[in-house]
Length: 354
Ligand SMILES: NC(=O)c1ccc[n+]([C@@H]2O[C@H](COP(=O)([O-])OP(=O)(O)OC[C@H]3O[C@@H](n4cnc5c(N)ncnc54)[C@H](O)[C@@H]3O)[C@@H](O)[C@H]2O)c1
Image (cartoon, protein in one colour):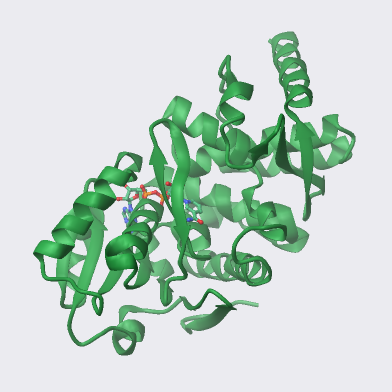
């Protein structure tokens, strides 16, 4: 069912905080939710250039675009700028941008004066389908992704899919990776709907995108409600991320592109361990082929060593998200030794196919 031009409100109520997602909404929908004074907007210079004219009244703090801004040093610098700008405990931080801005603004809001109110206007496809929802904040530590972070639910998240019209093509593709992820872990129908509308998705058709975003975000919201602090079932949202994070940092490629490659590797692992039939692997491959996002990347020599620093690794094994089928993900502890054996098998297979 398509919801044209209407704002869809989805609530995430958890014991640790409440969040209201405004899917398909516009800036006027957040006006009543913002404070009359004390608003600080964290954004990046790209988004500021494009959307600064529609920012609500407040102090604007910009950072450079991209992953390199997701550091503790940048969060500390922002805290300094907040203090200089007169922010106190009653101030409100609005993160206005993609996933980097949301992660960094959320992190800053959760540590400044032990926590101030915050919300997001989410502007990239990746942040609309994933990063801005669910209350995880993070910065990277050197070459390791999201090692420092907190849980803090944003009061609201505005996802206006019309803002995606200015998104560069590679960023649209990157977001598509996380959109597909939600379908692969939970919703086979959504998976085939994405596949059927791929041409329109890649053309940035706002109606189709708006509909798919709503459906993907509902999946994420339902998982987060059940497990807001990621103690168990929420781990399925990490499908593709254990391999993906290593590739993202190693090759400096966009997050969603790395996750897409990571999903394929995790699906191959699922077929290799016998958890999933090979035919399902081919189903996933054929959808990803349609996205034009099948980077041929050599696996880094020390990929397993790098994976062992992942947050999901404990005592020689790692919580991997595997598939039983497209639309059905499970979390399984896999010894790092077994992952090493799989990586060797994968490399040999690639060599043989050359
Ligand atoms: N917290 C979470 O639960 C979670 C989940 C998934 C991903 N993430 C994080 O999200 C980050 C990736 O997010 P991203 O892909 O949005 O990256 P990003 O924030 O770097 O945005 C990508 C690029 O698009 C630009 N941009 C954003 N919106 C735009 C628009 N409407 N028009 C034109 N340009 C626009 C940005 O300036 C940037 O150059 C990663 O750091 C990842 O770890 C977090």
